[in-house]
Image (cartoon, rainbow, N blue to C red; front, side, top):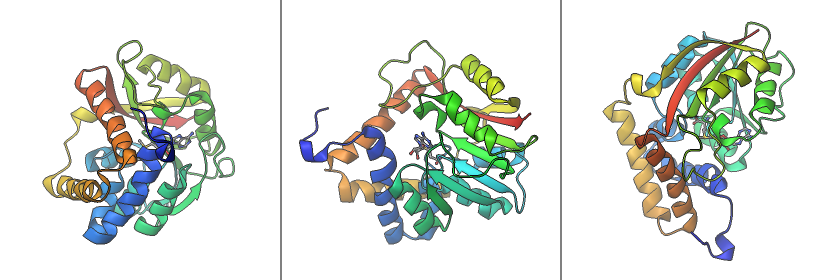
Length: 258
Ligand SMILES: C[S@@+](CC[C@H](N)C(=O)[O-])C[C@H]1O[C@@H](n2cnc3c(N)ncnc32)[C@H](O)[C@@H]1O
């Protein structure tokens, strides 16, 4: 798709930053109970977040760094459901602003190649739906390892390639194979202790899904004619297509820092 000059911008920026601002506006109209469902853009399911919280041993007071935490949906879920104390680190300014303004998260604008947390100061780290959008996965994993002490937990949600070079990937996405991911985790100083395919967990219940749908409908009504809307939707469509074809799959993993 060719965009007019004034609407140019990366597809990832449309998907993660512009949509974050629109989501904040839609939730302000629809009500705060829509915030967490609408802000879970990678993991997108309470069962997945419950699994991650359990596998990472989160409990009240756990210092959780959520790298690439987006609009803060998973972090806010962990705070609300297990009493964790999350910090969202997110490179897109409007996503970080949404995490704070819409969900009350502590959030900083920052990237996974330089996480603004001192070495060993987190109890657990999450990195959900992020590794597949990053080219230098070793650098990101090294940072995740750095902020954890030995024994600290890492929770991952990763779109894994099940074929060589999945066709027509969304812009900015680089899906690792499961084998490559295992090697990278080992080299970064992690031991994988548990894993599950997202499809093996229950889907979101009706109420959660209705809230997601209402926010999406409000965004479409307000911005459906924007080229940035088309750009963001095209990214989502390409991921859904690859999943449908079995070229990629969504995997949850828990690892421990050695
Ligand atoms: C699919 S979204 C997932 C957001 C959130 N983790 C969730 O599960 O709802 C991917 C996120 O990774 C962020 N991201 C992209 N590149 C990154 C990097 N180099 N370091 C940290 N985050 C990054 C994007 O801005 C986006 O918010």
